[in-house]
Amino acid sequence: MKRVLPVVAVLAFSAPVLAQTVDSQGAKQLSDNLARYFGKQAFDKGVLKVSVEGDAYKIALDIKALVNALPDQKPLKFDLAPYALMVKPRSDGSWDVASDFSQSMSFEFNGPEGLQSMQLAVKDGKGTAVYDPILAAFTSGASSIGGMTMTSREAKQQADLTTGAGTATIAATKSANGGVDFKAAQKVSSFAETIKIDDPNNGMNFPITLRTPELSVDANGKGVRTKPLLDLLAFAVANEDEAKLKANQAELKSLMLAALPIWERIDGTYGFKDFEVESPVGKFGAKQFSTAFGMDGVSQNGKVDYAIKASGLTIPQQTLPGWSIALLPTDVDLNFGGANIDLDTMAKKAIEAFDLNKNPPLSDEFGDALVADFLAKTPKFVLGHSTVKNGDIEVAMEGEMTFPGKKPDATMTVDVAGYDKIVQALQEGAKSDEQMAQAFPFALAVKGFGKALPDGRLEWVIDAKADGSVTVNGAMLKPADAVQNDGAGQDSGSGQDDGADQDDGSGQDDNGGAGAKLQP
Image 1 (cartoon, rainbow, N blue to C red):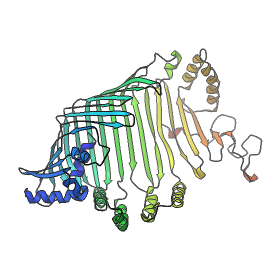
Image 2: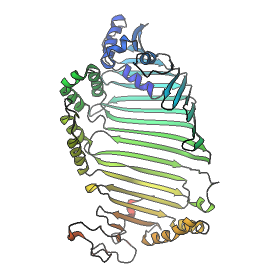
Image 3: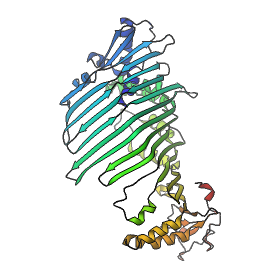
Image 4: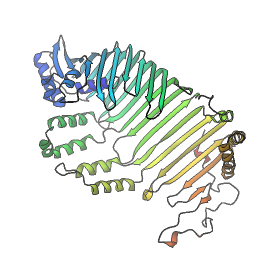
């Protein structure tokens, strides 16, 4: 519901209406403008309705009428009261928007594995906002709920979710480079979800419960192309007929190009305080836990970023051997993503080339060439500075990987503080665990490749080239693969690197390592 209602609100009030007087003529004008985005049938079938309510217009969205209008695959049961927005024109051309989205909903339908059902209830849901039709965005808004419950039932799984009170805010302004910049925030208290899985086919039968006293969501966007995206929606409604769509594909291409880059940047974060996960093997927890995602729009040098952070981690220890406790992480900070992503060239070439009169609109050969061109721009996977900690032990890492010739070429730097404590734990484990007995000599060998940094850390700079060679701190661990049909690039057969990267035997990287890149 928290995702659906804002979307419904944006779409249901996305057209400028110039009339300032609230009357039946204004209601008809508002209906005609909304029909541009939803189609006239939405009004004919009672899915959407605009009426005058005092000094405001009431926009009612009846999902039940939409379900009843479906030609087949209707739910066995469906109960949902119409959702209504009260909108009132302001003197500056914007609109006051208000809604009471307290709601209860239930439905049942026959799914692939039998009967499925869902019940949802939102208590004391209220919201107010100011909508600017020129920006096609809410310039300000706030909403709140008193609580929410949701249950779903399937043949092999059931879920129960409850929350306490929650609040949300949104604000938007005109972006300097076109489009809209926005910020949105949401907080929900007393979040709890229990999922029970009972699948005899897979031998799975367990419950799991997630809890947090506070769930927060923060999002912000820059340069979101709200108006061009609405123009695309209007085009889709006006060209539902296939023949008409094909005849007007030049206009479609123009509208698609106008919508690029869709947005300049979108970022969002989910945060959890005192997060707990109860499972059959015990309770997992974190004082703070968050996940973040960010993505550039369609650009020639785009980035995608992910982050997972947790502090104060607790892990059930009753099923773990005692020696492993010292190695369990208590703090995690992982950062990864992609860079050098050229979606702009791909999108523009595809828009220019597609032809709806052909089947397929884009040939397989064109698709293959597009992918090859994309890879030629050297997109790369990036591991940003990331750490895993436990007491005096900290593992830090960063690196990147590209795929020249569709083969991976990677560089990674790993720093470890407290490596001796890791070795001690593995040595203790080797006394009773056969696998640890095999891992212990490997841990000693790895230490031999490490470079001692001034702060006492050990560092490994690992280079894995597309030719198959692998070096660690400049020492050849594996030579390049033999080149087929070309003796010039083959290994000398000595098992040693014949180039200047030969290690001097000191165990040190003659170039000084990459310790300065990795800061704790």
